[in-house]
Image (cartoon, rainbow, N blue to C red):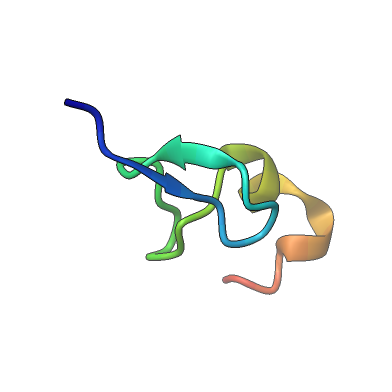
Length: 39
């Protein structure tokens, strides 16, 4: 059974394990230049 959630930035479905700095974000959004406010 897979656990899914959605990216808080682009709202696409991601795995729950895919969290960056405690935010539910996909890797593309995390690495996007406009989202580098998350230090």
